[in-house]
Image (cartoon, rainbow, N blue to C red; front, side, top):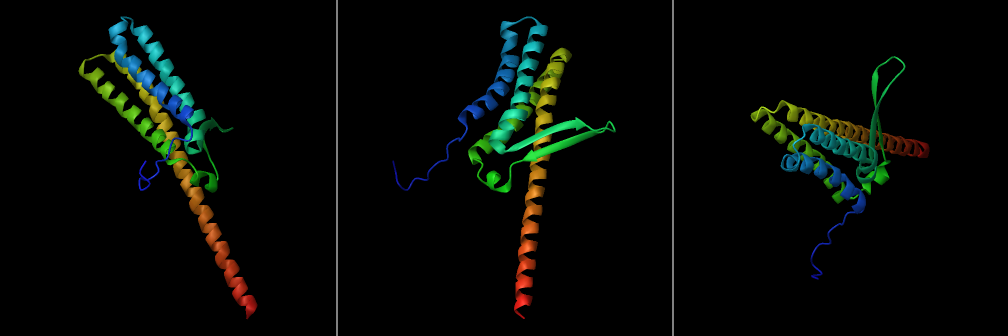
Length: 183
């Protein structure tokens, strides 16, 4: 091993990364390969949507927390309005998150959505409205996670900026107080 070679960072949560990718790949692979093995649209629909739903759940409730330190959910308040809730780790913990884990998390989410869009275009070209329904459900689940985690990430950045602003302001005011107390 060359001592001048940079040390590469490994995945800190390989099992979580594996399952983060597994259900996305399984849903896409089953949808693509199912035409070879099955003649039943119902089986293709049920299994593909089930795998996409498992992916949605794993990303939203497990890998989002572990790989990027983010969590989101949507609830209905007493007035019947939809309210988005976001959670993120504190700034220290976010700074320690593994970059490779984070990269895998975001890129696989975006690439899976792009793959579903491409498959949707193929379904449109072939005039297969029933398969377009499958793609639509899977794409909706993928996009819901993308939107939720993107909003969560923006909320986390806003919290970090507010924390930094408060810290700078408090240090500035304490510096001013100590300067004037000397006089």
